[in-house]
Length: 215
Ligand SMILES: C[S@@+](CC[C@H](N)C(=O)[O-])C[C@H]1O[C@@H](n2cnc3c(N)ncnc32)[C@H](O)[C@@H]1O
Image (tube, rainbow, N blue to C red; front, side, top):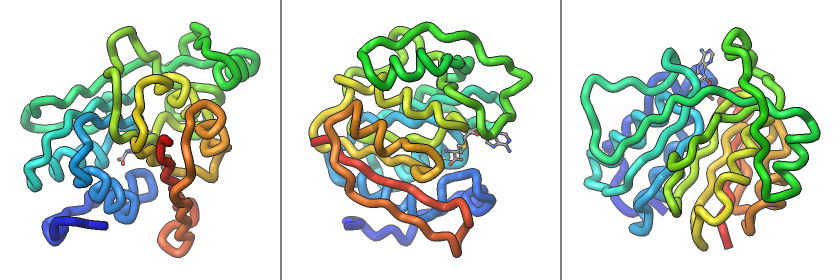
């Protein structure tokens, strides 16, 4: 449902190396941004996708604010210029024990966890790890959520943080949805319905994303 011509959409080069969001995910995100109701976006896992979001906002005169989280100053989005209503938050990673992780999935409590060693930040399959979200980091309500970090199964912690911070109609885009049971966790914690699951192994063997909508 692209409403305006997207001939000016420029996909980041990095999206072809398997790490950045792929063009089809970015195109869906572009569609959601244009539905007229998107004022606040939160992105977990910054990078070329952040540049894409800011470039869409500029090119199409969109007015959403963007909160973006990452743990890495090396791999996060970097811009030569400043952007209004853009908040890049570099946060440590916190690791939860299995018991704590289950508590997050099953109750309203988010335990403190323990700091994840920076030496292990390159671990693609880090267990039960999420950003050390601080008081005041998150806005009251997001209209669009892009979940693409950190690496590992711990991304599901985002859903607990998003309780009461989404509204009916908020879209939640989950990259790599099939690597861990992210969709199941999202359904367990938030009142959502699945809109789509997309896999294009011909594009990239690991490619896959899902979109859910808050109901
Ligand atoms: C899947 S990536 C996020 C990509 C981002 N949403 C984008 O579209 O560019 C998840 C995290 O991996 C980290 N990362 C990115 N490239 C990396 C690399 N080459 N080596 C290690 N970590 C990397 C970044 O901190 C990033 O937030």
